[in-house]
Length: 540
Image (cartoon, rainbow, N blue to C red; front, side):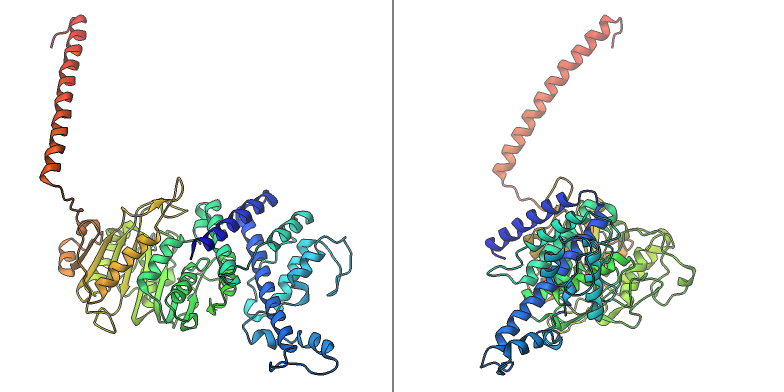
């Protein structure tokens, strides 16, 4: 992305967020996000519909085009043909009925109560009109059934406020000379998700993983083609980043199949809208469901599995989980789901597949509830590939330092990968990142490139070398001698700092001088204390 594009998006973000907050300050962020994101989605699919419609008009009047209409009643025929659904669906464009077309909504959101609407019925408030628009879209597009927010009327927001919000979103320039409308809209959607996560705090952060972390996981896993699965998908961040990764490397998004699961109904809908905006085909099961007791993809064996589930989840166990086939490496503790998530994901990994899982740092060393035995079994079965320790303050919802487990079922040489059997790569990146705000740290693209590049070199027969304080390739025997602890800091050591004799001499002179001054101050202080004690008739 060039500087001009970056500035365009920054200006757009500031305008939308600031103005939108002024319009509906009374709504809780958890509610407000569905209001705004639903309208953004509606604007986008309406814009893409209109764009396709305009192209069709050109085609119908172009004598060299297959769609050319030559009859004397061309105007009538064009108008009729423009309402043929197949022209839109053949280009993967959602069919938008008249009642949901953005220009119509904007035009009629300020009419009087009871006014007749051209598509039928009468005006009963902006909230009701928006709900009807969402219902109409779902009816005409089965892929969107149950996805869209239809609670606008229930919120009882003043009509003028809704109308102002519609006008605001109408000003969003989803066009740029070097950026597609899908990219702009997707960026806006992603930006709003992040802002809402920050506004909601812990609750909101459950469904939003910071983009820099998602980017890192995707860059390391390299999902060029195959099945991608996220059993705790939230708003679908890993899928979005996989799309960006594929496009950045000149591949086609159609090369991957997306599978996900999410238990929260509203978050499930956010993810589905996120995919629809980007034109990504997805399978999120029949609907929102708990991953552990209602697996929506029981037979799936994915090539890439990635997730950021809730850390240290306590209330997860059900008696039916006893003896579950997923617990191949040991039954997880009933009061912590960390190793349940890990084994669930591993269960869904294809024979040559890999997974990346974010967990709390405690998972690397804990022995409570049998976690140590599970970790030992995973190591002895040579499933652990890469362990990465993060700094704190990377998440909106917790300050707990996190780590990433990368596991694979096949470390043997295949394709461009060398044989990594019996080895684990440890990375300690706690020194990386910068504070993007007073409370949150981010990884810059340069950090991501350095970390991912190190993993890629290690996997391939390239010039990988250990770097003290940063990375080290460790044989499993060494991990066994460290009681199967997987904390990178235990293995990578500390960074070696080179210093010349001249530098050492200068430094020592400075230190000894400072120490001499401190000795003098200490002596003077002793004298003062002794005198004061003597004045009180106490001698040392």
